[in-house]
Length: 477
Image (cartoon, rainbow, N blue to C red; front, side):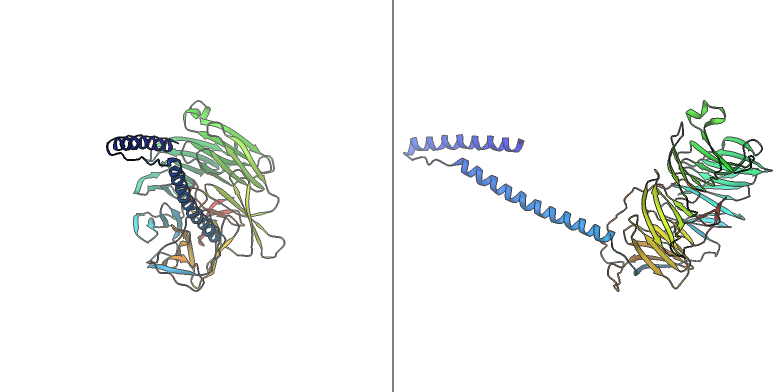
């Protein structure tokens, strides 16, 4: 409207000026003034502008339609071939395990941990000696502890930040996004909790006596390090029951006895796995379902999911969790159900894939692995990629781009791109036409497995990358 107003003012001024010029010329030269149809001129200019805007709108509409069409096509396309864009030789020990971490992956074993980029560049290396290392990852911080040992190493993307030594056998360890570390220790039937800051200085400690409270099974630390949840099983009544206790180490908890801000008790229920997906949301995985709690200063039970079938595996990241059931309609079938953190079902997947590990990749795709096969599903339930390898597969990671992945084999790292056209080969120098189609902004979850876990049928939680075949019993039920 402002542009049209200024344009009308200019036209009016031009009319006045031309009339004055012509009147002056006529008075001097006896010329006749020819009247100009300014309304017709304005009409033609407006029509020209409308035609131009219409052409622009058509072009934009075609581009948008093409983009949407390509997006839908990519979302529903399946792949069974890939091209290796880069191949790198590695020399890892057979005991090494791998986790998605930051912009690369974490490699750890009994004698050390390393942060490696996707192109196999070593960013840092930390040596140690541990009989049974276990790892917790939250954002850029990593805590590596010796199970049943007394040593913890805390690192971030820059390397070692501190080394913590405790005086009792370590059972569980959790790290927060700013480096706070929570440790559960057990000795002579008594559980002990300790909280340390990023420098290794102790913040808080306490004891859980079995004769009074029960046996602690798991702990979870919120991503900001201010909230700690403990799962305690009690069999004194003749049947197993679980109590979940919440501690707050912020302003609210300072006004409470022992920083305890919430207690929830469940009869005939075992909760072996707890995980904070953010600062205030806790998932508690039970033998017959999933419970969720929300609130930092005053935790409250929110959504819950009741399950009748036996749960074979669990896996989760910061936005979703998945449960795997045995599909009774097929002898070797499995049913995978994915839920959001409010326990709302997102997708059901039926598969006969016999996996050793299952988990989310960092783009929320679901990756199933065994030693020689890989299957990747989208959150829409589409089996995006399936492949049978000739070599043993250790882990699979998602790389930047809709079709890019990193495959770790026994001695080789392969950077690959899924083939759009069957039988085609793509080189690294070809123009990349991928569209990033992740539906959620990724954040690493504060879990013992970084952001992806799986639980086997024995009730133990695997530490993996969401795609790792070397499983580790992280949480024994």
